[in-house]
Image (cartoon, rainbow, N blue to C red; front, side, top):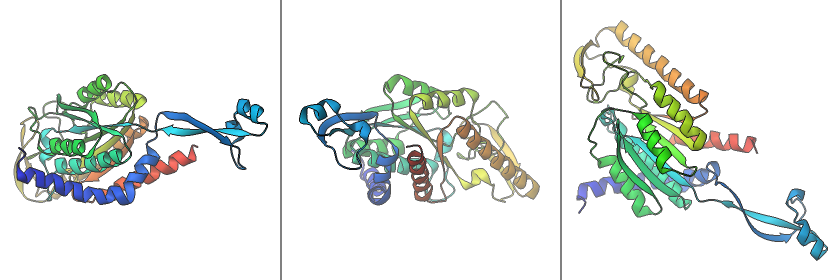
Length: 317
């Protein structure tokens, strides 16, 4: 029996995201994520404006006037949600934690998928794969996916994106829409992090070379989208004087003086540069990315992503 407060939380997310799906993103999802090809459906009489290339010459010869082949999109797709459950995801300096925002964004995409009769699967990971839900259809399944993202208790706290993407390559044998929802911050060795991860405040926006290579490889096989969720205090520290902070993933402890304006400015500059570098890595791998923050609405960046992608698709037709 699922506790009432958990059901209430899941229902709130469904209600919040359903309007966005119904009014905006459900249709755009259909436009920007296309099926694997076209299936022949029937022939019909030629009409002015039809493509000459679509004429069925065999039927045309038999009937003595032109007929064209009609095709329908081979629609059914699989949306694989690959969600980071590492320790830093529990942080949020506002009402919503990074993990809660990840659940809402996943909800929007999952409800858009089932509205278009696509399947939805889930991979939850830390520095290992914690849970896998095979792709299925239907509202009940999507509500289970949201529940797991919100309330699953991982065994570990670290981050290893390569492990999750290697697992994806084993379980997704056909091309899928692979959406990675993460802060894209991986430990790069003791003492290497650039700032605090107190109670989950992640530090420098770093991605290991192995994870970057895995992203590139996954994007060649699947339609991969990187959704980065960060918090404002990961970008700019508040001036709160001396703080003793503990890394939520490695357990490392650091004392920092946030009353020093020069140190705060240096931290903000370093984070801004790291963010630019991460965006550059995504562009170089031709991976579409969306940047979200817990103190800002996700609906505008999501809508902008769909609009940009739709314009690009129409341009290449």
